[in-house]
Image (cartoon, rainbow, N blue to C red):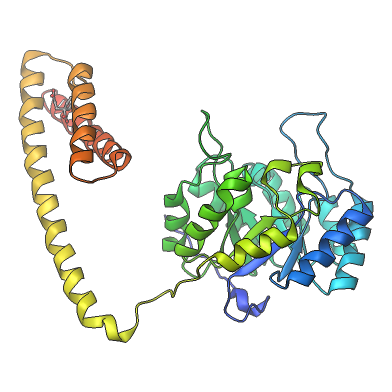
Length: 364
Ligand SMILES: O=C(O)C(=O)C[C@]1(C(=O)O)C=C[C@@H](O)C=C1
């Protein structure tokens, strides 16, 4: 992808003393009392750099609680006054931006259901022209990296340079362990393309349930994200939205204290050993590619046979057999079967591409 982002480093707009940024707060601002109590309990725990709360809630179906709107902003402004914690909220249209600025909100984020629509994102970017405020962009609900990048480009067009990405996971077509599947490779690719873009993980929306928060948060830290946005509520089971994925501010504190923040880089004392192990990997990868090339040569021969005898490229029964057999072999070798399944899906797709090319070569 050919794109360039001009990013102000995160530490220039929020000082976390080099620690991962923690944005914590309730899914929704429900009542003044709930906002103030939650804010003060978060503050007392000491881990949060920014408080979050939903003011307008985009819901899958009508009839669910859709947020308290402007009164919630008054409660949040009071929470900021009492705790000193900067505020972050989601905005979905220019009116939300205007109100957020009026009540002194410090950081805005664009939600996954908004990122997905370039018209909406452009409206937001236009409303932000001339405003100097950090804007975080959640990944779109579908795993479309270009759409995510496009949202940043629209913000940059409006002069916004304090930007960051929030990885909240992607909608599932089928039921899975996660509410929104992380698809980590999307965030890793984003980091590869734009190493300077802060990446913030949203374990709450990936998980959908409390029991998965810890493992997801540790995974986020192990992938060296710049921070996390996590939902916390004074009485999670009674929350008006996302009850099952919220924790009390104290339980969140306990969880955060148990997480291990590992170093981003190896120490110098490890340099020689590291070089040796990496040289081994370089050799093994070369062998892997030689083996793949040998397989492809056989696939090409099979393709020529199929072309000359008018046989279809896709051989479903054989593919099913390969798929099942390789997964079984994987367990025997101590390899994660799902990894091997995915790998062979890719290999099979490449076989089909190659054989289709061979088929077409007869038409030349
Ligand atoms: O067995 C074949 O017919 C092949 O062409 C090989 C192969 C493979 O890559 O393993 C490729 C395409 C078919 O759908 C099934 C299997």
